[in-house]
Length: 78
Image (cartoon, rainbow, N blue to C red):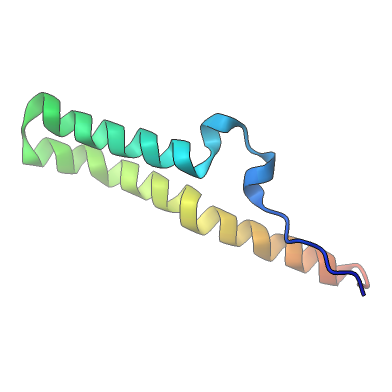
């Protein structure tokens, strides 16, 4: 039995789609909204889709990718 390192989804993504760039972009836009307009309702309106986007790409997508890799690994006789 060989011990292989788990494959990370981030190995296949370009620099602009890495966790640090997703966090930096989201927080910059949300902070920029507040600093530019000083309106809570507008910042909340901006933050809802951005936090959803960040949550999907940082939490849900990598977990789904790892599950897919595990299923492919066990599905071919390994």
